[in-house]
Amino acid sequence: MSKGQHGELAEFTLKAVVTGIILGAVFGAANAYLGLRVGMTVSASIPAAVMTVAVFGALRKRGTILEANISQTIGSASTALATGAIFTIPALFLWGIVPPLLQVAALCLLGGVLGVSAMIPLRRLLIVREKDTLPFPEGMACAVVLRATADGATGSAWIFRGMAVGAAVKLAISLLFLVPSEISAKIPILPKAEAGIEIAPALIAVGFILGYPQSAVCVAGSIVSAFALTPLIAWIGASLQAPLFPETVRLVSQMDAGDIWSRYVRYIGAGAVATGGIVTVLHNLPAMASAFKAVAKGMARKEDGAPVAAVERTDRDLPGGVVIGGILMVVLVAGLVPGVFAGNMAMGPRLVCAAGVGLFGVLFVAVAARIVGIVGVSSQPTSGVALVTLLGTASVFAAAGWLQPGARAAVLTVGTIVAVAASKAGDISQDLRPGTSSGRRQRGSSWAS
Image (tube, rainbow, N blue to C red; front, side, top):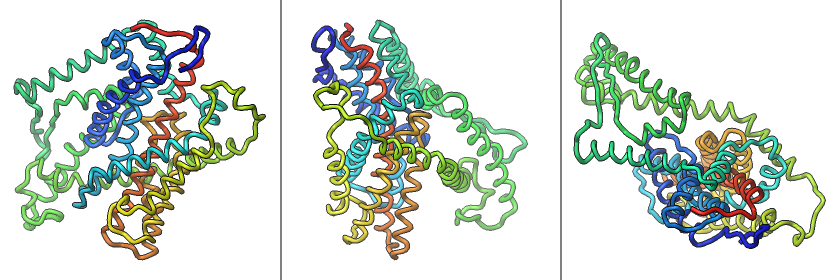
């Protein structure tokens, strides 16, 4: 409960927690699906905020803006876990290593605890001291949405309209077969070139959320693939009398456009993604370094202390013991408990993995928490964080001669924990911004839905 000028103001309530958990399960699953499908995720803070108010209204429950903020914070938290996991865990399946569900849950839990613990001492620096220099775009937008919806705005109606349209299209495609799921046409002159489109409401929605520039990049990749790479490979392979590697059975002349994409273009795309990730990391290294320096400099500053009792409840941080204890717990569990990392390893490799989790985790939590204050959660370099972690940990493994398949899988799961921690830190820093705004500006007010 939070005290305002009109008495106790409900905040951390069962209604808010249950609503947040339900929304988190829905948005987390949707974000994981989108991430695996198109390679990118979107922030769920704003939809969760609007849906929270809509759910409270449907239940005819009176609620406060602080309850809505707690609910949207819980609801958006699951998307951070999904974002961190989908960039690493699928590689295990591609290697033929199927991790148990409990192991995946443990990796996400450790990453979440590490991200939250390391983020606690950064709150005062990033959210309070630098409130005028770090815009936290999604956090401020979420605060505006909460206040506007609390005042009776009908933004939630558009979400339900979008859900209805998406459900109707999916029903027409998948169950009633009224509309084909894919439409394609061959392009004359260009050998084996085809123009195709998949009717998928989820992907169209992602395009709306991402905006024109990022959506245009995705479309450009499809255009290059269909109208340049596929015809070029078909033209080169038309005169070949032997299969062109990696295909070992069929000739290129015997393949259609889909086969050429599957056997050749897809690998070109994977190489482009890897190269783009490396270039992005190199490009962002100065920004990451400056972000970490700014955080370290801010943490080193001393302020006039005040008795805990004199500090407003909403401005208090958890004790330092919780911060250190949370980080140490993650490192110790990761290093000492067998089976956390993929692959059966001895104590030495496990300790190296645990050290990588602690080092890269704390480093990238600070970097991610500051970067999202400028560019937002949807644009934070989670894949770059995972890549740098994998390169650093893999270098130590290679120097030690640990090259067996289990070692490679263990390195990958180090990246999982660190990516989840960085993603969670970025998400919670955005969520703390509307919490500060809503709590301070709306204290003492409530709204009826």
